[in-house]
Length: 219
Image 1 (cartoon, helix red, strand yellow):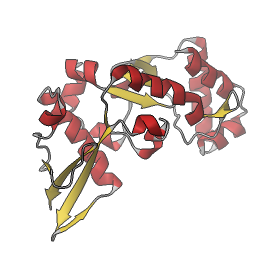
Image 2 (spheres, helix red, strand yellow; image 1 turned 90 degrees about the vertical axis):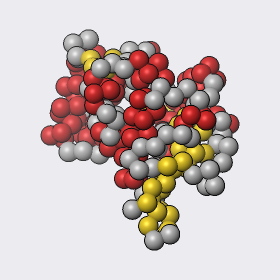
Image 3 (cartoon, one colour; image 1 turned 180 degrees about the horizontal axis):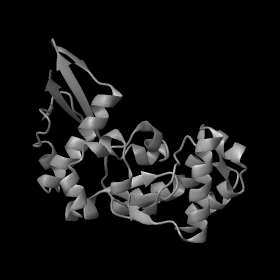
């Protein structure tokens, strides 16, 4: 773990079981499991797993599992995951099981988690250059506005009876399908992203802007 990640773990190790439950917004019985995980991370006995195999949110469940399990080179080289505990890590970066996000109620060095990580997040983008963001607002807000304005974001919408709509479930599923398609086609440019079709989604140039790609599908 990096020094910054270790500082978070050390801070959480000082919490009582009730404080830990409050920080995670869970019951104390569930907090006992997290307390044990924290102890194992500190002692160095916690097993590690490739990050992209450990996260199980809706977006991740819509990434082709065969691509993930094959340690795909495109995922290795082009995809990075944001974490409130580990910072920004490669898709296959080794991490321990943990329950932690930017809604976790805690501070480190007198700062909120978002403020604590902001410089590191911004610095990553400054070194990497152009970023295609599939982030939820929770994670985009960690970056400074100046850096966020550089992102190319992706929006997914469904069209029914001539009306366009979007909601979080549509977006999360489509992000996974979009990343799968980009991986399968080995896309290396924004223009090539515009040619992708996935789960009946098509690029809509009439709705898109320089910094946002919009894809729609009819239902």
